[in-house]
Length: 598
Image 1 (cartoon, rainbow, N blue to C red):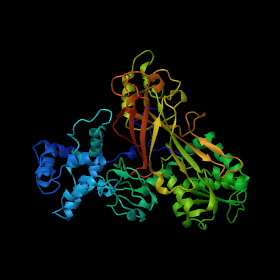
Image 2 (cartoon, rainbow, N blue to C red; image 1 turned 90 degrees about the horizontal axis):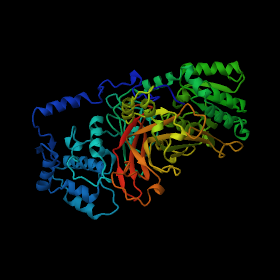
Image 3 (cartoon, rainbow, N blue to C red; image 1 turned 135 degrees about the vertical axis):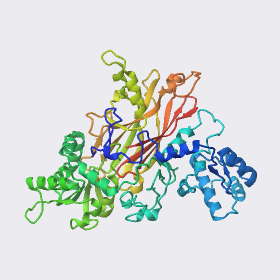
Image 4 (tube, rainbow, N blue to C red; image 1 turned 90 degrees about the vertical axis):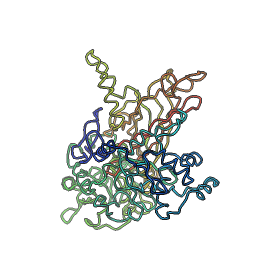
């Protein structure tokens, strides 16, 4: 399922829904308030840096840290090095110290610092996510503390300048705790309503307020996502989302997708031991095609849930036309509920845990776009019997590197004999900030595919929709020379496994290795600069010089760290991409973190 909402197609990153523009966000991507502040700062040398321990103010972070070291016995850079604190941990340390000093003016680092240096395998007291929220509003130190560090080894250094600039543009960090998430609405100047629709989790923290979204899974480092679009009214977003499915063109596209529709048809019609006499719920039924398959398969009751008022009426009419509708005048088995599944009890009579089979075509671009999976999991936990079937029951995300052929460069290099490659290069630069949904052909992949993340839909928790995963991309073994990897392509498979579909298990694949392509296509994330890769067999024995990932010194593999999380803008997702090139001798080079919003 993929609505015609804000999306990039065919290499045009400028296509978007006008309604999605943020009022206070300028065309060049900067905040007006920031620009005004910067202009004011230019008028004189203001002391913007406030000491961590007293009220002294300084004109630079260097002078502030010198003061802290000499007057308060706190060596910030020394502590970072000794405790091996990365950017995020250092960010949290500053906020932690400010919070402790605010509570106790006599608080000092001495005893705590010594304890932390001597302790091993002990969590720092500033590890909590709440310290990612600036304790001091407009704290200049948070955006400057890493500016003047000594240069690190090129292969190991993370480009902090770009990351800090991202933080400056994105604004403040904010965290909402578990208790707030559990409430049906959260008061934040009216900016975060119906938060329980975002996550039904009781055991994780998710931010839903101004600025950055910080996603943290158990045992994982926090990942920071672009939250500039928070403040939208979730109910309005839902109305627009469900309204977008009122177009018959979208439904024709989905039904015409044979890979999609026939996978569901086979799962429902070719597994009689599962379907015969079962109570079935179809979440997001649209035209009702899956509900019709379920009725045809011998279900005793089919509850088709559809939040779009228009499509609920259409599904009802289609069910009546096919003589499967059930009401006081019809003796079929299919009933249509015009409702969000979270509010289903307001529309029909249905007992909790009374459904045998839960079916839904919930997948969006990059699998998780539209955030419909959380509604399916809600339906599973509320309506499905213990041991009941969920279709599909598995979902798996894959990743591979793509080459020049998957970009628009070849087209612009020869336009009726004229060189227009400057256009292609400009488009490529834009796509390094914006994800593209397009069909990528197998021949344009330059690495082998790698597993990114797997979901067991029968057992997963709602908070596991957000995740951070790692993968290693190996160049295609058949290659005899180095090739440029311009970025990564993401796709997914969903499985109707023999756990429930005992007679005829099947797989719905959106892989570039699978033809024909589906309406989901693939999701393309473009690197800020291409990375030269070659199999280790090609590089073995060579004594290559130069930066890893360049033509002079190709990488033998690319290590990825990918975070996917529901964004502050309801039904959107944020994807952060961390890329590391590894040479045949094990040396590494890291590129700046990239953040994409879909």
